[in-house]
Image (cartoon, rainbow, N blue to C red; front, top):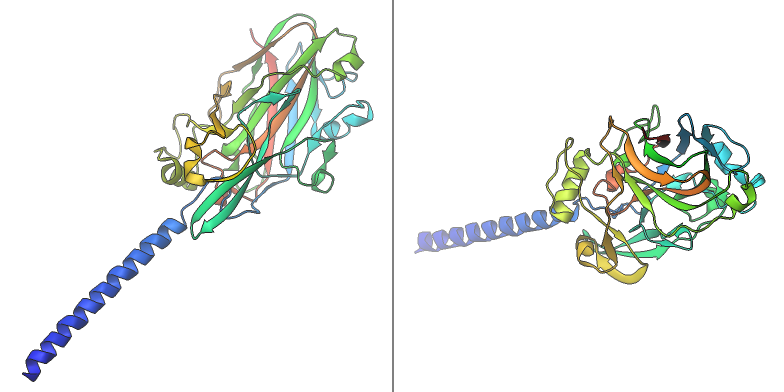
Length: 334
């Protein structure tokens, strides 16, 4: 009888151990979902891209300026920062730090609507998103720019005849020399808003232009992703892609600010987001000039935006703390 009782106790003990192991496995599985990578720097709210370098250049036949007064074939970040000295209405915003912004490309009063993503952890591994619209101002560096998280500035293009402009193969977004490559350049975007055109000698009138009503968006490096970006594409959006050679991934940009939290894995279903179709999408090291825009003879004012797209699968936790270089070169198409 004692042996029978011992056998029963041993069977019950084995059942309890199996139940414990099953519970432990479930806990581990839940935990593995909790550490999945999300876009919008979701679990690292202070992740940033620091130290931005900017170069805008033109090829023979096109002159470029930061004030419509002094002309050359190239403008630098320093010139953009100091343009206000001869361009009184300048609102060139150049913070040192970029973080998760989004836009559907809408333009209001000559400026592109830009929205900062704000994430909150509702429970372990579950995040929600709200956004706020950011305004623009004349500033440089994080101290002056305060809570601004994207770049915006004006350039002026001078041509003697109507031309079709292209983005040359010298245009790219890349890590700065010597900087660690964490893949943040794969989430970079550049936007262009054409504000209007005046005569070749009307510098003041050119500065005052603000007729832009639509935008052109360039998505660089669409065919490459980090390992973490590939995981984010699969886990959040249900998209299968690869480290290199992939097709352009569709995404939706924010179209309005919203305070009602949206689950990060449900943004595609929300009316706060609109599908974005970039005018130009280029592979890493693309080899063919890309048509961009047509401009008439005279001085054309163009407002340029540079940001990190929060809805891009590559804008995930591991992409932070690196140094980027934005290079834009414009040429007349043959």
